[in-house]
Length: 287
Length: 168
Image (tube, each protein chain N blue to C red):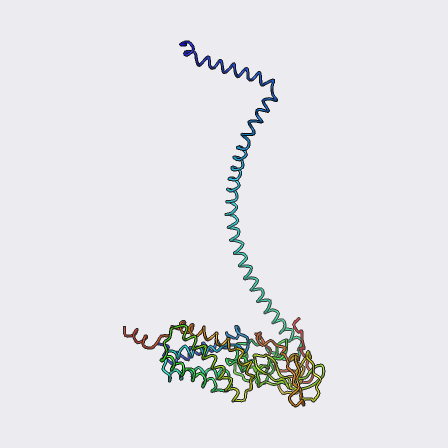
């Protein structure tokens, strides 16, 4: 036993070598069985390997996603800032576009009425009392504005100047109950007077002169030129209703003004105009 | 304290009148523009004696009438009455800084518009009643919120509080 114990390592080494040599020589001939064996081992090992690969892949993917997330967050912030900038630019553009349309209209009006002497002016204030429809414009006697001059926009008549200071002028709107303009129904040629009602209903009363005037809803109403303030042919509005007076002797039409009095920013004061037939800005003047 | 000086009232009414004629018409449609001058009159009259309330109302009304350019005396009378009544009322009620002034302002705005209709009717302006009262909700809501807001914004204080602060 002492011999075996003393020579245990060389004996073990020799045995291992013998076993290995035997195994190698044996398995060199039985390749199919070894492959089966290895497939059997794979049944156990592969899922574990798959799980490990999946987890490792997931971790790598998560790490990539996390990096991407930070990148996307930064990109998102940058895009949001750009969007805010573009939105504000869009608003500015819309404002400029609206101004452009308005000013184009005024320019077109001026070119259409070539022989007329028009003065553009901005609206600076309204009447503090709701029931008196007047507004203040930023041009006065130093610019040549005088009392009773008509004030128009491309859409039609606004009113007339009622008082003037050196730098401002008060314009009495058509809506005011004390305003009045000689008017003519374009289709039937019936004449009358258009007066304001109140600013709430926002309509005008067209008091017709003739007994049977044949005025119909939808008719355009223009200035007749018979009143001392307004030249002939300027658009006042459109008839929306016709009613007979209590005795049935006269007819009164309700006229919707062509001008939107809520959106007046710039108006034109007619400083001078040729007498006789004018070129009426009937509708659709804005190119 | 500036709020008791007549020149401060005039300055305040000038600012209110500019806002009333140049700014509020951009926000509210024509015919529906609320009466800011009246709101300021109510806010100031809350800290005044009846006679001074009537005076400040008369100043505000006169300025409105001059700016309106017609029927000079109508707003003068109406606003003076409002100033007088609010100043008289304030000494007899318990009030806070927001709700009660708002309610008084709203009530005043409503009554003032109806009174305006009656005065215009007497003076020959035959406005139909229904369109005339159509802006009432706007007037009332505006005064309800703005009276307290104006008082807070201007830091208006009762006279006894100001006197006490000056003593210390």
